[in-house]
Length: 402
Length: 160
Image (tube, rainbow over all chains, first blue to last red; front, side, top):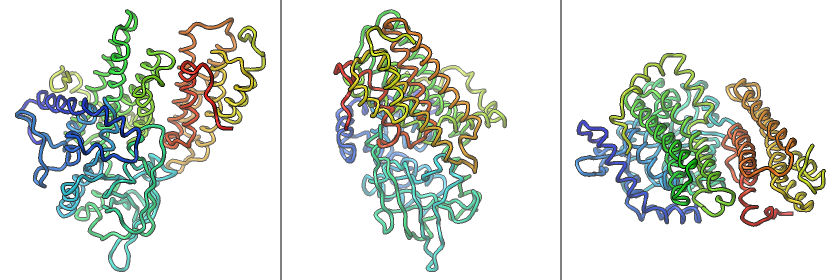
């Protein structure tokens, strides 16, 4: 966060309002992206996605912060990213996930990279709007990052050779720079993250047709002896214990509230569709809507609390609570809205059909519900959840979202 | 088992078995030949497709390892599969016990039950179920059948 003025509520409120205004103008772009998911360039014609192209890059590297009144934003914090992601996802999550920018790789670079690596990564994104990829997941392993098989081999000439396969990589087929996780030795400390610029010999990317989030172009990456300089190993200046998979977990903790926020945005967007399609509900339906609105507001507050906690401590237990609960809310509420609008609504309201599909997609980002709930139990068992519970009892305060 | 009045009494069982054995596309083809599509038949069709998805899911879980252990041996996974089966059996029991045509609210509730079971199974299948050519495609088609029939008045045409 570049400025806070001692008033987090006003700070986040200003960001939310600006993002809401931007997103409100992107309905047509959403329809274009759905019709032509292979081409995300129409996003660049609009101010919000253009800002996203450098959001997350600190000012000292040349990025221009967003200014709204007395507030400045650079989206380097989980809580700012959560607000941005929710407001865009309320119209269409692909508007932010398929946008160019540092995205997940940017958070990893901020945490692990040395000065030269940061300058190169950020410089590339500041030079021209660029898509990035974050290549962790592999076929057959899913959420089990410990089973990672992609190899990083030190070659005779001092370069590193990367070989393996990655799957479910967002923007993988359009990205020009990204991070590949690979193993140089057995065990979690043997896993490292490497900056890879594209095109490069030996790396091919193929988008897969998906049931939702189509503009994200979820892709398979195949690496066959991809040669990169040793200088591209992120955190090369750090001891192994601070640059491997364990170190990356802290990054995932800070990314997770953003995924929860995407799900909150999908749920809120489903209510927007319901109110637009059926502006005068009957008495019983009115009660349901009030309950649904209350649920969205509660999970939104939980998500923001989790983001603040991730920023403050790096712990991701609350983020797991938020992610699991928000994804459940998005799935249930989109189905509830389809039920409320009655048979035929999915075909008559394309945005509803898209929301129903997209709600399934966020479930698989950054660990499924089961993985998150196991994290929550672990947090409860180790006392981390109890340590994080005290702030829940505070009033609306900084988390006001109206 | 009480069926909708005037229907071929084997319609539901035959189509459902076809779905459970060979997937929704096969069930749809058979259903279009059998005719007599009623709201209750549509639910039998979807239940058969859901049973097929259950088979796909257990097969997937039986071949996938996390941390060296087969997923199907994980107690958390087992309870979720058991929950899915239980819900399918409840839907089957309610459909089997129907006396006459159910009202819209009952139909909506039963469709939602089948959808919720399918969504649970899709989560167990992981990201694979989000691919257009994976098992999620049949589940999404099943989920939208009621909307398609409401809009067109008949089942969607499927490739031969």
